[in-house]
Length: 360
Image (cartoon, rainbow, N blue to C red; front, side, top):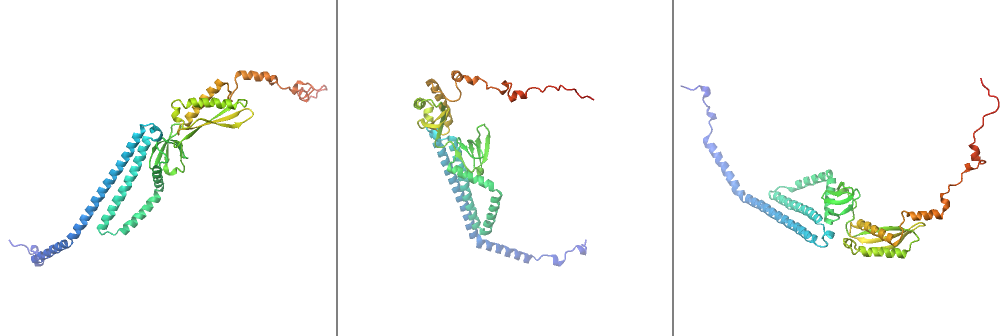
């Protein structure tokens, strides 16, 4: 059965088999030639990138392990000192642990950023990529992010320097200006304080302009004793010295007192009282307990010695004062007691008139 003429292929539609094979051979030849010319370069670049990645990963692992080992050694030394006599005084294990972990986290992050960032730039340079536009774009992006998150950057940098300089730590009692209390956690961005009433303050490190650490060095316990001006200062000094000698020999005050209890002298002299100031150098943070104990013992010692403290007189003194001034209970004379005084005449009622009354 003959095919219709419309369905028969035209002579021009039949591909030239020898030409197609020739073009394919030329393409393969060109590809092989290109690979032959550049395989050494590609292999060199690949090996260089692989070497950079391996060295960066190994260096990062070594640095992180070294930092972790250093932090663990710091924590171990803190735990070892904590069991000694000075452990509770000079070293706070939780404070050292948090500080070391924060420093270790910062150092590990900085080391990873520097190592991996340098490796990435070296890989891009090995691939013959121009780094100038990339660095310029990164610089612009960094400036934009810095302006947008300047408060966060400020808090972070302030926290890093506070931790590095060991300005305060967990367990310290500080006055941060915006809030005061005991430090319960130190972070790179926020510091948590426990206030005197139990509240928790979250203070941004960038908002802290000044810090008063009440737990570093030593503290001073000061007691003001008000006595009558007729008391003997020599006797007062002797009684206070006896109290001080007894206090420094008893536990736990022998550890909390870092110096002798001294009578500094008269701080104020008035007509009805005089103030004797007593002071002592104490362990940081323990000055208030020492002050309360000193007041307690000085009051008991003064009562036993018959030294009167200003703040209220006993009943016997009240009777003596009344007997010494009998006119104190007499009321002052009144002007109304004299009937001829102007005050008495002004109180006399006006009599009614005697003449005829006018009525409508």
